[in-house]
Image (cartoon, rainbow, N blue to C red; front, side, top):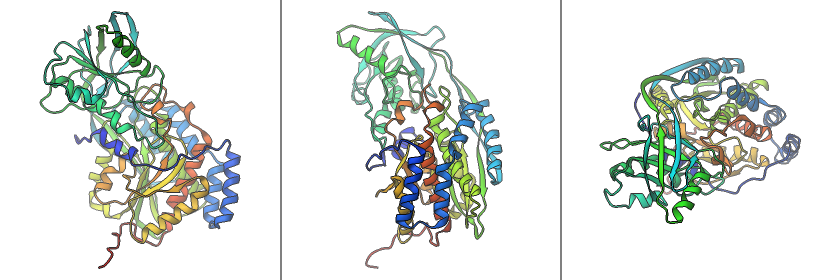
Length: 484
């Protein structure tokens, strides 16, 4: 399958959030006590109290995140490690108690990272930390040595005259601002997506960008890029933020900076990938599907803990809470571990295509893919009387620090193709203030996962899927038209 989606579209999911950042609790005990107290105040149903207390007292999601990051590690799309992760997920889904567990295969364009080096040759020789962007072309094995053409922002490059960059390596800076809803990602991501195309159109040899991230560590951020048609592919890599700062300081002295860049990735043709799917079969409406999940692949620098081992663990953990509580939902709860999300939502498109004949049976869909910090809000596309049921769900998790927000939502990156085909979406918005400190770096590892925050996520997700399953409403209904 060769369908692609611009990663800039993924940012629509991140920038669609709004609302107040919730305060972090200090301990599992504090959260659990708060849950019990507030549950009494809002008179939660016994099943919901059971679900939330089970989730908050347990480590359902946390253990699953630990398992995939420890036993598999990095899971680049199309790699042998991603294949091992699919086998891991099949076993994990069966252990949870899901039925119809299977791998739904598809292929992806393979890309393998090679050597990565950058150094200032003049005026002040020193090494820089760099990583190739996914899909990048390669330099010669001996590298490229050339003067830098500096653009403070992507827009400065986009507005530059045609030509004039022959024999140059373009450096695009531009800072990304922290925000709990990830609002800075879309604007900052343009240079990653389109920087190589715009520089190539003007004759450049290669591009280096300030990493799309919010940290100040010497860990460059990778991520997928794209070449537009009829443009010569040129190499592109991301510098760590401190190294981008260093370049700017030198350039600020009025110096001409000569850079040597060596990036040797390879495109290796089609490789196997796949989605892992399993069902908790509904007792009364088994044909109506509530789909949840995360993406199984990760970039190859860290071990994909916050992106997106956390999402797989949180959603699988939520189903495990229902099973461990002895509760049997009326509707089918489907868990999907999507493959090849990082390189263009390829697993999401494959799922939507494979299940195109029964998407009308998908009554609600959501993905967890924004790290492992606490949920602070609910957003949904559900309209009409069914929205009242979503409001009831929110009221049942409000004591966990979760508000209701107006506005549209994609439901998560891998839900975008389903949403485009009319599947209603809901999203539990997470606090992403520090998400882009770790996103796509060597530092995305399990030690960044907070057990208490994951438990709060699992409690919210388990409540949501249980109440949605039991709801006597049609989530697919159209909004009422006033005056008709």
